[in-house]
Length: 342
Image 1 (cartoon, one colour):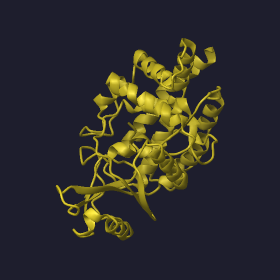
Image 2 (tube, helix red, strand yellow):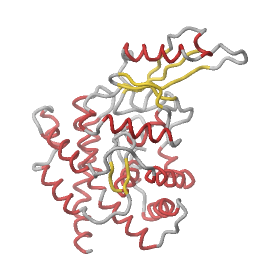
Image 3 (tube, helix red, strand yellow):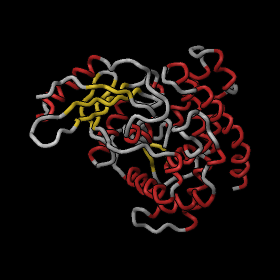
Image 4 (spheres, helix red, strand yellow):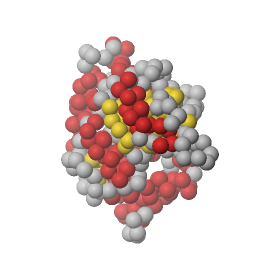
């Protein structure tokens, strides 16, 4: 799904696998204390020692993610391991989302069965239920049956009554990230990736992307209310990536879903709650999705630039950012022309 925990959070917990690896360092002592407290409350673990084995997991690109596991031995029967996920927040992520809002979203989704349970928090991270699954591959995302499930689940997600403020925050966050991306805090090497007057891009998009939307979406970790079209746009853009490859930062936009794939996904999304969608509704949402590709490329391009400066995870953030900005400038004339014609 996404290269950041916004849409990948439960899946990335599946198992150690290919993709960017967390920096090789131990989890904070505060997290270890929390793990020992959790283990002490589990009868099948308490008699086997409270100190877990901690293994770094691959695939996360915003946080460092670990699996903590204990051999279980109480209660008789076969011995089974206890496993939890430890998430250590990455540096600089506060520029992209409000952590408290994200945790509220996490807890709300968990209550509704859409994500792992929150087991505990420490100052720069949290412990979650471990999801026994595997991360979806790039090929999985194109499988018609899996794609239909994603569309239906996304609609369920959007229909949840989320806590927190219900105002669209994408433009505010774009402006904040743009200021950081062009500021003196970043290395000069990042400057060629940025076009001048980035604030003018954002002002133009905010004026241009003003059409009425009937739904509001909410990202998973980069939590904020945004138009549904923006969430679906991010999903479509992620189809250009293959995070299980040897070069997970390389994007191939020939893999962006074609008209038929987009139409099928949108039809499933709109009809999954039991309401039959008409052709005009499908077409209008597809047009909105196309327009929001500009916002998506800017958001994740700026994410890449800032992450390159603040994050030690083994991922070529700068090259990822360059490709997203390149797509922005390639798509802008076409989208601007099509909008003027409407």
